Length: 406
Image (cartoon, rainbow, N blue to C red; front, side, top):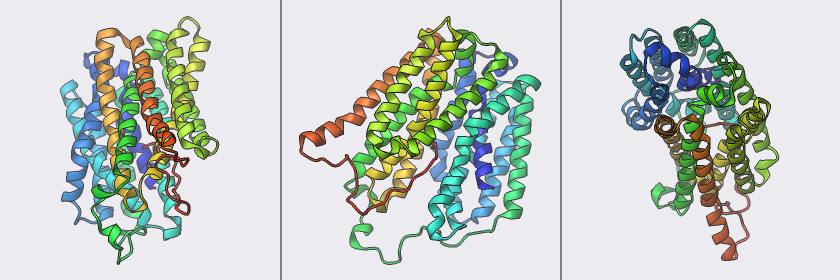
C-alpha cells in the first residue's frame, strides 16, 4: 500500500516531463516554462519538508500520511482544471508541500509496521515504488495524456491518489509507537555526540555534493526528454510514452546491475556507470540521422543512470558511521531533490538559449566533473597508503542495501 502511494507521488512529480509539448501548447507558454514546473515542485519539497515535519510531529503518523496524500490528490485536481500557467504553478507548490511531508514519513512509517529484522526489506519495497513510477507510471500517464489530453492524465492521477489516501486510512494500522529501528535507550558517549561532530561528515557531504551535481545534469536532460526525442532523434510525439517505458525498463536493468555486479565494488561501478551515461547521452545527439543508433544510445543511458542512484546511496552508507546513517540519508534525499529542481531550471535556461540538443553535452560535462570528485579522495587515500575503500567502515559493520532511486 505504501509502495503504491510512493509510486503515485513520484509519477505526479515527474509527469510534466512526459507531457511537456502538450502542456506547452495548451497553456500557451514555452516548453522550458513547463519544465520549470518540476523545479517548482522539487524546490518546494527542499524548502518545506523539514519545517512542516517538525510542525506536525505531534500528529498521528497515519493521519498525517492520509492528509498528505489527500493534499497531493487535490494538487493533481487543481492542475487538471488549471485555466492558465500561473494556476498550474500554484498547484505544483501545493503538491510539493504535501510531497515533502509524505517522503519525510513514509520510510519510517514502513519501519514501524514490521519486526526489526525486516525493516530493511520493508523500506526497500516501499521506496521501490519510486523506481516503478519511472518504469511504468510516467510512461503510462504520458501515453494517456497524449491520447486523451494532459488534463485527463492529471485528473486520473488525482483520483488514484485520493483512493490511495482512503485505503491507507482503512487498511494500515496507526503505528504511532516507537519505530522498529529506534536506537537503544542507553547510547554510549560516542552516540551522544552531535551528528555534525562525527568524523564521517566530510565524506557524507562529498557524496551529497556529487549527488546534487549528477542529478542536476540528469534532470536538465530528462525534464526535456520529449522535445529531445521528437526534435533531435526525430520520432513522432506518440512514440514518446512507449520510449519512456523502454527507458524505465532499461533503468530497472541498471538497478539490478547495481545490486549485483556493480555493487561489489561501488566506487568502480559508480565511475563506470557515470562514464557510460556520459557517452550514451552525447551519443543520442551525435547519432542524429540514425534513429536506431540514437534510440540504442537512449536505452544505454537508461541502463547506466538506473545504476547511479543506488550506487551513490551505497557509497553514502559506506561513508557514514552507523549512528548517523539516518541523518546522512536525509541529506542525500535533499541533495537529490536539489538536483531535480536545479536540473529542470538549468535545462530551461540552456534550452531557451542554445536549444534542446545542447542539454546532453552539458550533462556529459557535469558527469566528467562528478567522476573527478568521486576519484579524488580515492587517489588521495592511495597516496597515503590506505588500501581500504574511502569511507568504508571497519570490518564487521554492515551496510543495508536498497533499490531506492531517491
